[in-house]
Image (tube, rainbow, N blue to C red; front, side, top):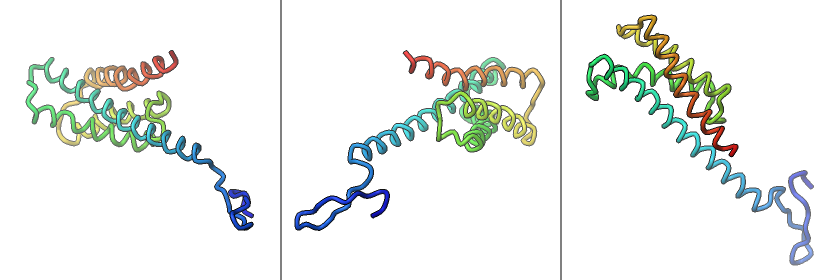
Length: 153
């Protein structure tokens, strides 16, 4: 007899084994797994939107326009940093967590975004780094904090 199965009398006096998890437990595990996958997808989309809003506002404030090619050329370094941050933090495990996932995602997005901008010949003035840290910190961490606060109520 294994620790995950218990004997139960069968129809003809034979013993059948019953799994340790009940059907309700298996369904609950499946539902919580689906919720986690759904919240991870929503979190990725929210983070991408935060980066795109940052880029669109920045381009508009410098009158560079909102052409799709221009937004893509400005956004790709930060989106690559965002992806690396998700991988580094393994954020799919706790996508709504402020710490450590949100902080790692934020810092990777800015750091790798700036490094990739330098490598690709785009500018990285000190003021731009400060603005990127502040804006992306506010947005990437802010929506997670709001989610946490509204979930408690």
